Image (cartoon, rainbow, N blue to C red; front, side, top):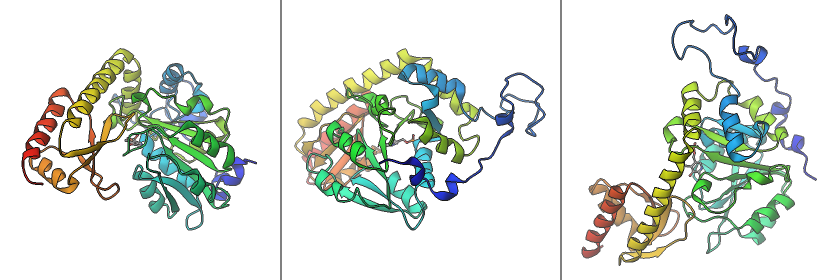
Length: 346
Ligand SMILES: *Cc1c(COP(=O)(O)O)cnc(C)c1O
């Protein structure tokens, strides 16, 4: 049986959250002499701690309700909060499927939490047989599933995720940073069905707002109540909230840019196939492509010399580099550079 309260760290369960001036009086108009703010200026007031305007827009766009939305200072804050809410340092564990996004590891290390790593199989899918062995560990609190996965680009099979949702009594954290590029369904629609599901998305990728630092978590209200309790009161600045609201007010632009990126991705997939140095192109539902090449370290260095920066993933996946889709011009320059490398000894 899933029991959320049993998963929460005792100090968090008993924590009395900071009550901000804006928690106590919710009206928008009034004479505000409560928060030691400066009465002059444009950004002189503390931002809405619950980001209601942003959540209302998001709820409408994502067909969910504002009570099921949490906004973080990037998804990285949401990942870190997950450790701080659920994982007792030096005692509890999380599980990841490698290779995957590096922040789960870093956040775990910062919080002194052990990471159990199960390698993805040949198709970069979850090895359920190996995973099953870990599910009964009482100290295993969270399973992170990145789908579409970074750096491999593929989506994790629905059946595997559903199996884990049904058979693990800890939290399942699905990181959907790239979902907007994918034709596959988001797990947001399942947050009421599974009491242990949290889905994170971000404004950093398809929405083009990496600089603004706005990450979103979708889950049932009970789970989110702990995120709201632990987060710093004003975790998302007014500037950042406004940037995200503006993006949501310009959905046409969002779709236009996304279409351009996806068309460019198709073009890049075609061009890369024709290069001798490319040994394998992995299937991708994201805005990046994982390539197996002849000599990843050398190719990475040669590209750097031309001021073209790709991500060398050789240390995780032998001879693989990850390339993000840029503008038409940037992509063309990469292809040209790779073509020229073709001729020289690698
Ligand atoms: C880029 C990325 C994010 C984004 O993190 P933010 O803090 O929201 O910018 C989250 N998860 C994965 C897997 C990513 O690749």
